[in-house]
Length: 250
Image 1: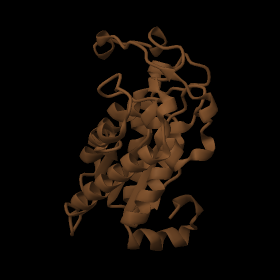
Image 2: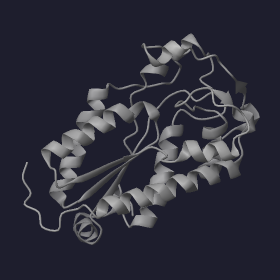
Image 3: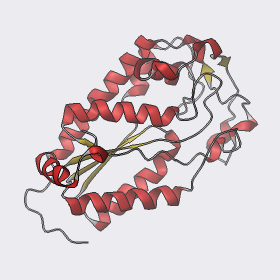
Image 4: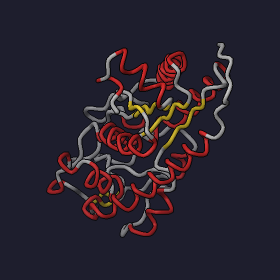
């Protein structure tokens, strides 16, 4: 259920019945010639919607900007500071808590947001420990990807506008994919990129990290569905930790 389209009186009843809110968080950044700047937003929104159906949750309006330092010089990219992202997520979490939400789920569509979202969850833990916060980024996808990918991973953590992410889009939002423009770009990512600030233009001019031409809808479906099952499992486990009797204060 979409939070923003409910009235004030309706949402009061909705929260009483669910107590779970999902915040999709994405980014605006270059994704090669075949995917839109808002790819991470689209994926986060579509995945959040599917997750909400399975855990009976309210879906908040997307937070569409993220930390895009590495790609900030590519045309179209918009970046915000980690602290900006931390502050707004913490403020949202506190607001939801005062409304009666017990479980705040963040569905992240952009790897670069990870540090900020983890810190935001920690701040919320200290501010209102009765509120459970879960931050999710395609749990289990790396193991699942090994079963369907046809091209090598260029990095242990990065996947971007490649066989995998393009497959996710073909499954969740095919209307935004232009496979006629998909390319194969296999840049050599230096080991030092994991140890020192490294703008991506130092090793790629396309923002594509892999072979996007190898993307297929069924690959995306396989990986996304495994990640979705893992998300549901994590949420169910955390729901068991929600205190039954709470004295709210922060």
